[in-house]
Length: 248
Image (cartoon, rainbow, N blue to C red):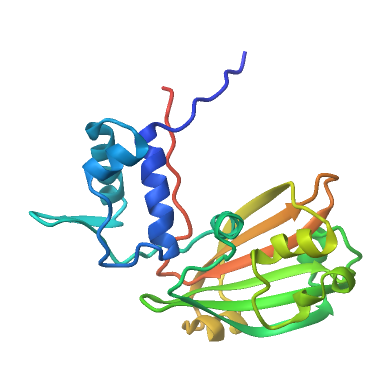
């Protein structure tokens, strides 16, 4: 009989929280992370648990210890996943950290690519809203080329989707507020492939570069697709890392 899986160990929960802060830029390179004593007090855990959390971050290459000084953030090569940005938008009202900037190369209604209309359960080649963004970091340069697609009919109830500016609380939060359509769950997948010419120009890559592509489709409670997000990462960044207990 299947068994219910246990939650992550406390030290991995702490490490995951700090990792998200580092990847998002809330803890920028050079910033000091909380000490073992501070983590133990904040999370109400024993000092050895806090120590294991910092050790996990060191193993991931996200922080470094300096004798007599503390633990500090290293230059990250990770990019926040769409899931992490959505969680940030829900908590803080923005998908981006203070040191990130966003450009909008294109926003408008287009004939949807087949893989997009298929994911949104729309007629092949049907009209969709396309929001294209280039996200950069003050500390580490280009982060990702991100494109979101929505059914074109949302333009009536959520017109700000067609503006070349941030809508606040993320597009899904805005759609929930403007159109009353709330995302209930999401499905994602990841692949690697050669960059297209457009992606190479946007991310300043050589023509033969490989990129990591992250797809996320959000659905409402009736299993209707609301949005299709595609994040394209340059090869010097890894998109995500997972840690979980093993029952061997």
